[in-house]
Every structure is written in structure tokens, then in C-alpha cells.
Image (cartoon, rainbow, N blue to C red; front, side):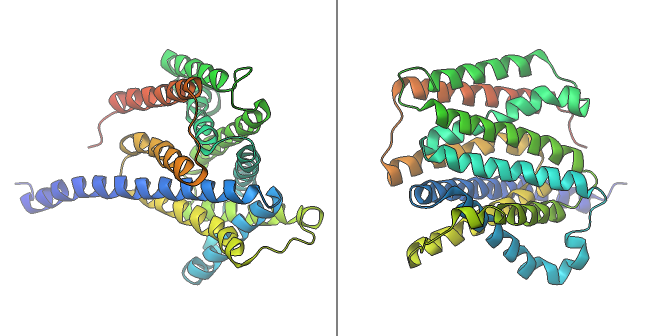
Length: 304
């Protein structure tokens, strides 16, 4: 006879884990949107390389302080350090080009263009990861690109150079996600998180002598600069926790809550509201992404 007590406990804990995972995901994307809003505010006053360096330095120091005592060498030990470094460099590219985009784009538009990455991952998963790719992924990417064209239309409110920066960030994010999926079965999530912080700190430090001279942030701006690392590191930590207890197919739609947070912060902090055609382009990108997510959720096999 099956253990009815264990079955009942599993049945009760499963919905609790799902709700907890969704809550952690919503908190994570709120932290990411807050980091982006803080970065956009600071890019108007300070060099982007300096802000990138501060974001990764604080993140790295936090991991060393809180995780090194319990993990030791396991914090950086990896059987595939080369791929770890390349993955970290891709995230560094995401951070740098996104901040450059913030100088020219609204928070809402820059965040929306970043969501082209899941569409590109879905299309490239076939040749790169040998996964099955259907027609829906290709159609969704075409719809998403149509949304970008609408946002960056000639004569529109969005500068083309800003869209280029955001587009490069989306390409870097695509490579970052593909490498994450390649490494995830063999690597610790904490190790992957530490590599992004360490490589980001070391590489961004190289640009400091040419970009940081006679710049003296006041106390409030110094706090905001340090918060870039706190918000980014905390967001990634909550994201890892969410995916550990809840299936990815369940959490994927809630990633798009970042667009809601970004729109609210854009309105409250920067007093910006996109025009009609820009909203239509945003809607196309979101619809394409959610269409792929819903399709994958219903086609994925049920977990036992």
C-alpha cells in the first residue's frame, strides 16, 4: 500500500513551492528593473565603464563575504572554466551595451528589446544545442523583429543608435542564455554566478584608467552606484532560488513582469510614456515571446 502521508505531503508542498517560486521570480525581476532604472539615472552623470565596474565589484565582494566561508574553493572550481569565462563576458556585454542604450532609450523600450533574446534562443537552440525547433519559433522571431522595426521607425521618438546598442545587448544575452543551458547540467549555479561577478570585475577594471578621472560622486550617488551590485546580485540569487523549486515552464511567463515594473518606473521616475506606434512595437515583442512560452508549456512533458 502506498505511503498516503508522504503523498499528501508532496501534494500540499507542490503548490506551495510553485507559489513561492512565482513570488521569488516577481521579486527578482523587480530588482532587475530597479537596477536598470538606477543605471539609467546614473548614466546621465557618470561614464558607463565606471558604472559597469562598480556593479560587478560590489556583486563580487558580496559573494566573497557571504559565500566563500561556506563554499571555499568550490566557489570558483569549474570543470569548464573556458566556457564559464566566455559566458561571463557575454553578460558583461549585456550590462555595458544596455547602459549605453539607457543614455538614448527609455527604460521601457530598452527592456522590451532585451526580450528578443528568448526568441533568438528558441531559434538557435536547434543548431547549437541540437534541440527540436519548430515553425512557431521562427514566426515569433519575425513578429518580434517587426516590433523592433516599428519602435525604431524613421522619424519616430526612438534614436536608431540606442536601438543598435540594445540590439547588441540582446545578442549578447542570447549567447549568455545558450551557454547557461550548456553549462547548467554540469556546473553549480553559485559557481556560474561567481564567474560572472569575477570576470566582470576584472575586465571592467581594465577600462578604469581611461574613463575615471576627477570624478567624485556625492554620498547619495555613491550609494546608488553601490546599489547596482546589490540589486543585480540579489536579483540573480532570487532567480536561481525560484528555478530550483519551480519548473521553468511555469516561471517563464512571469519573466515578462519585468516590463510592467520597467513601465511603472519609467513613468514615476523619468516621467516618460511611449507614443502609440512604440507601444504597438512593444506589444508585438511581448506577444511573440509569450506565444513561444505558452506553446512550450503545453507541449512539454508532464513531470511525474
